[in-house]
Image (cartoon, rainbow, N blue to C red; front, top):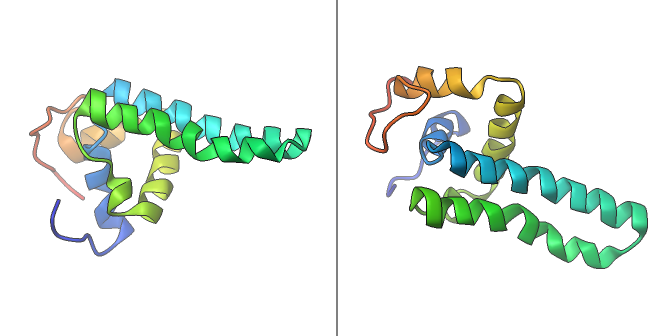
Length: 121
């Protein structure tokens, strides 16, 4: 992606398109849930050293998903805030069983091919 996307609404289909493989989304879910749990653990135990683990817990699994599973570049490098928001939107959609319908709406399939065209934004 070379052109900057102007809005989060325009970014969301791009973001989801970078997470087409269920395994990639799965490791994102692990990291997205582990990061706030690590924050809670740090605050409840008083062990503030755990705060240093939050980025590792959150980004580590996500980057494995991109570099090893999807073989693409994380959107975080270009869109740090939108990527964080979209990641938790993706987790919310997964937890509420809306991720498959959303993929189908955007790409025509809940398991779109890497080169599947965007159907609607």
